[in-house]
Length: 300
Image 1 (cartoon, rainbow, N blue to C red):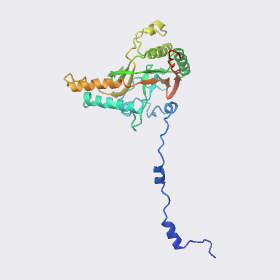
Image 2 (image 1 turned 90 degrees about the horizontal axis):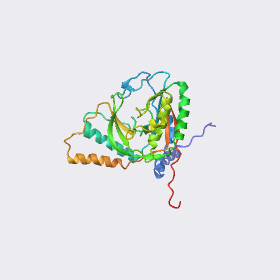
Image 3 (image 1 turned 60 degrees about the vertical axis):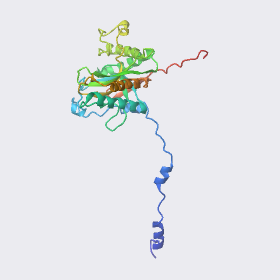
C-alpha cells in the first residue's frame, strides 16, 4: 500500500490548463484612490538631510558654503513661516524659474528649491530670524520665550501675496537667490511676528533680522516698530552660485511684454500661514497661530 496517493496524468493536464484568476484585471477594475496628504508634523520629522560630514564641504552641497560655520556642541536655530504650495502653484513657480534661466542667465546654472534630487516637492519658507547659534542650556528658554512672544503678538492665521520676482545675494555674496518679494499684509502680521522674534533674539545676544538700527541687547518698543522691514520679506524659490546678469536693455517689445505677464501671474498666488516653526538642530517645533476671525455681515 502506497503512502502517497498521486493524481493521474489526466487530472494534472486539466489543472495545468486552468489558469488562476488574473489579479491584474481585478486591480484595473477597481477605482484608484488618492492618498491623503502627509500632515505637517510628519514632514517636520524628515525635514533635514542626514549630515555626512562635520566639516564644511561644498562638494556635498552643490558648491554651497555655510554662512555660519558648524561648531560641535552649538545648535543652529531658525525661526520661519512655512509654505507648502498647491500643485498648480508649484507648476507656476517652476515655469518662472525656467523662464529666468532661459532669458537672463545663459550658461549660469539656476538651481530650483522647489524639489529635491528625487523630484519630491519641498516646502518653502519666509524667515523670521537670522541663522542663530544656541548653547545647549539656551534651547529650552529660547523656545519657551518664542512661544510666549508669538502668542502675545496677537497675530492670527493670515495670507500674503507676492509683489514681484527679484534676485537677492546672501551676506557673503557667495550665492544669489531668486525670491518672491511679499507684499505687507493688511494688518502687519509679518512685521509683528518679526518684532516678537527679534526681541527674543536680542535678549540672548543673537543677531537681528532686518533691524540694523536696533542697538544694544534690549531694544525699546519704539525702535522695533521703527524697523524698516517693508519689502524685505520673501520666499526663495531658486539659487545660483554666479551673479545673475542684468536684463538685456535691447529687449524686444514682445520680451518686455512677457516679463510683465510673469509679474501679473504672481498676483494669482496666495500664501497662507497658520503656524510659526522653530528649528533647533534637527528638531522642528510648530507654534500654531489662532484661526483668523471670520468677518461678520452687517447683521451677523
